[in-house]
Length: 71
Image 1 (cartoon, rainbow, N blue to C red):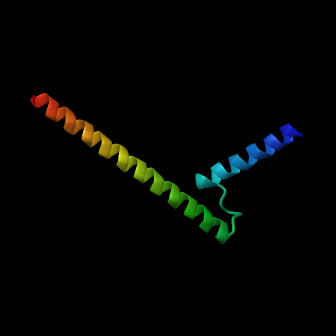
Image 2 (cartoon, rainbow, N blue to C red):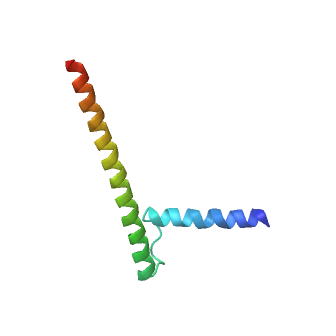
Image 3 (cartoon, rainbow, N blue to C red):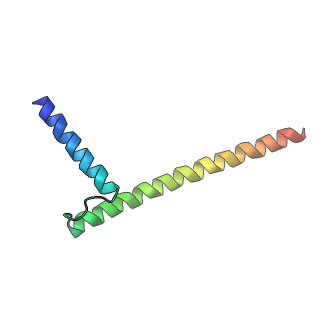
């Protein structure tokens, strides 16, 4: 029973992954496509925030290195 459950979970995750990659969207309803788009938008916002934070931290580190090199 556990194997069947894991196989189903794998199938569901694989399908969700394909949809996130823009594959096999033909059978989806408009509402499902809108939900998928919203999830992708939220994910992209999180990625951009993380990227901005990392870039800010790198700028701080470079600034500190430049100050130390003058001393």
